[in-house]
Length: 302
Image (tube, rainbow, N blue to C red; front, side, top):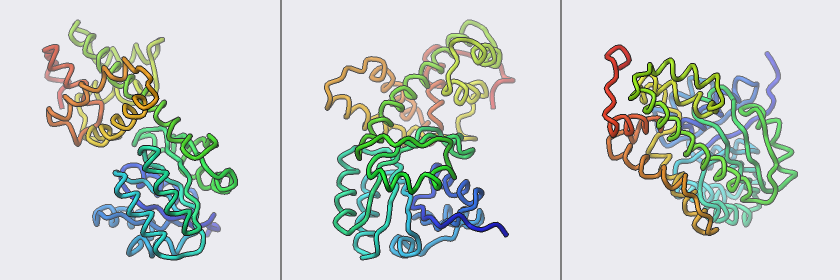
């Protein structure tokens, strides 16, 4: 049996955290996980993750913890649970997309108890997370980041040390602003082509080989071709709304005009209102199709 590379804890075993865990196990790490969902705990247990009884138990069993959480309230609760456990120093890599203020609050709580929190959001979708095709924007204590790089390599393809705590989140806001725009732009282009009578598969293949291609187009256009936004959800519209609010609030705070980003927000709102909240954000295509009265051929529907 191959020697373990080490042990790491993961709190939050959803689309992203679950993928982190699976890839770390595959790359030779022992993983201890926790999630409030019994179904997720069972699923990851079957993937080789040791499930802890709770956050204090997980923190006591590992030197390094990754958090991948849906809401800032969850981060605050986790920070207090680790701090209150009165354990030896831990390094916690926080990978969620929250406001910098939310992360700074958690950092202060953990620092008072002797722990180090790093701000380490990731760039990539759920499907990219499954294959380890992620980029980590790490910020905070440089020595701690350097120590975690071998572990980061277990679930990503590149890690950047972005500097001061919070810079990782700032970089994530910039990246996600582009994702928000590119996703709606992809849908807009697909709808224009379909309304013009072009086959959606042909549109995809030709754009993929032309100047208009992008990583977002390659990831989301295939869903638009199939008109299927629930079989392989990489980012739920409902969760993405939280990211949009964070980015919009930060841009407003800096007094930066974001006309293209702002123009996409009503489209995402409309997707949720139309019942696509639990589906992939590529479902904005369905919203624009309905608005353009596009009628697909039956063979393209699923």
